[in-house]
Image (cartoon, rainbow, N blue to C red; front, side, top):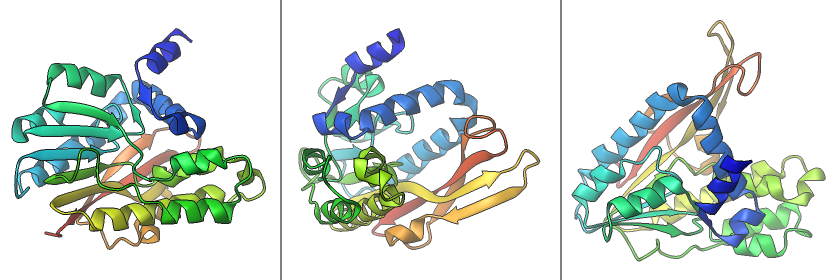
Length: 268
């Protein structure tokens, strides 16, 4: 209870993010990382390396904006601060990790609470009455506007694509009447985010779930679900595996892994 209270006190969050489950998701990610730190190490290192590889191809070095920064577990903030005049860490929840980095790099690194979906305030306002069709429409038509502080020379969407609609979808009462509501929201918000990224100037990098895998105790693949196609994305430029929930974190019978993909605009 004390650690949860400290987490809440040390985090900044949009009111709608608290109402629609994003703060709880942020807290749960921090807890899971604490439990399975070794299993996540490879994914976090691969994410940081992909960001730095792309950063070195940015056409200018004035501003870098990272969407989905959270606690910056997968974001090489110090290295980005050495490359860019300004680094903006944007998310619906800015946690202790990002706040610590603000203090470490004053005037160069800034954490900003910002809704990349552009839809949370509207969804929160109609949460009690909205149905699946209307929720998906709100997410599909929302416009977050330019990134916080303006357009960037290097814009990163860091491992948050699938959560933009899925998390609020799970928080809506209408899901009790429509079990597919979270997936409909995830698809609508994800497609909108991909279109938003495609419309921005500068170099853009997307790190996102490309596939979901269930792996048995013997290492055998039990199930594979391709994810990137539902967001209108082509094949990723490269992938790696994220041991998201080793046995028994998700289930005593299988480990849940994700294949994480890399996409860039303009493409390489």
